[in-house]
Amino acid sequence: MTDAPAQPAEPKADLDLFGKAPKGRADWSHRRGEPRLFAILWMLFLMATSGIMLLGVAAANAISPSVTRPAAIAMLVCAMLGITVLWPMVRLSQVAPQHPVRAAVGDLVVMLPPAYALILPQAFWFLSDWPIAVVLAVAGAFTVWGVLVGGVLALALATVRQVGRVSWMLVILAVTLGAPVLLGVGLVGSPARATNADPTPWWMASPVTAVLDITRPRDATGRSARVAARHWRELGATAAVGGIAWILAGVAAGFARAARDA
Image (tube, rainbow, N blue to C red; front, side, top):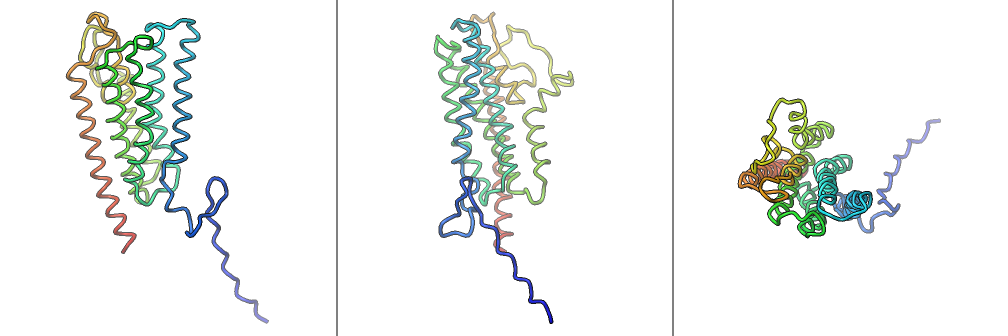
């Protein structure tokens, strides 16, 4: 007596976060990469970072630029790390979306406007009282570094089968935090005087130190901070590198799509 051939196991149902199966589709692949849940998590993260500023003001029991500026800088640095480190870390730990470039653009649309809502009010006198040029430069730093990291992330998601996720995350960490590490060990850069309006050498090469340099006090100029033409040139150079990353991501996504369709 021969045993009957084993029946193939039915494929496991693809369920969402709430345990629901898709209607009219085999799985949730059409939703992967959508920023819906990510948008909620991002808003919660920004609420937590804004709490840093509120705690700093509450601890000082006073509201003045001397109190709010350090708290605002800490808040902005945390928000910048959310865009340049936590975002790619979250996306690289998930299933790669079918359209990585579109997914990265959608994430940027979700992240940047709420970040601007934290940045722009810092021009008010009862908050950081920074000049409007400083506030716009900080917003520009968030934009160009978001574009750069988004381009690298889209490239990573398009080539994740050829290059490991950990390797891509290490690349992103090198891009975003490499300059502070080199500055810390003294391999690059040199200290700048507080009266110098130009960027501190190498500080604009990282999103974290870019925020610190743009908001750096320059008391000798008669202002709390000051943006020089070189700041804008450095931001423009970062945006250009980001544009190259997006072009490469588009090309890689096109090859990956052609390979799937073949």
